[in-house]
Length: 260
Image 1 (cartoon, rainbow, N blue to C red):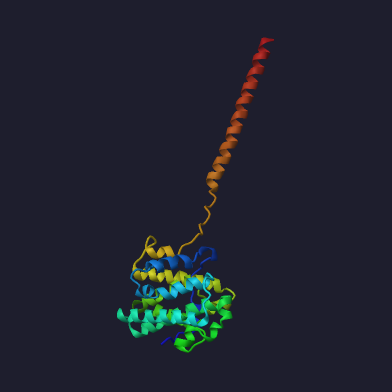
Image 2: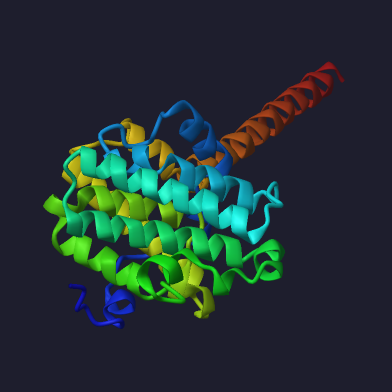
């Protein structure tokens, strides 16, 4: 299904995005929305149905989980089962559902394996990808699915939005080992944001804008014209004072001379 060349991900030119222009959505804010069933994409059923997976992700990356490997696997398996049932009840197609499940499995696996806890419980041998797709790592296929969604955006917009959120929450995949992987990921997020806005006909004041924000504000350029005007104005004022003082001094000398 996903036949895109691996290199296509890195060959595309997404335009320049400086690293300081990116502020990723925090897991805490997402968890709060998960708890309240308030998702960033109100019309996205996949996001709404994956609440258990995102809630567990929040616990994992905040080191607030100490389950045994069996309990963690049970929680995630139960969450994925509920996700599947909810999607099927909503009439979501098998191919779309399979893609979404793969994304969620790759997402949660990477988060767990990035922690000391995940290493201690040997999660690589118990991973969700291994259990559901017989794969040990999804760092490349994740981005192949993204490209597939991009090429079939009208049908796969919800999966594409799901991928965007996973990227904003820190998924790196194959880019984790690349020299400029951070910049590449920032570009992918920027492109994803633009695609979603265009498809959803959203603008900067829409809800999606809250999940791609920037702290970067270019410094106002120095207005040399005004600076020079002020500078020469001050110089002119000083010269005027000197000139008036000189006239006054000369006038005083003339008056004194006429007296004698």
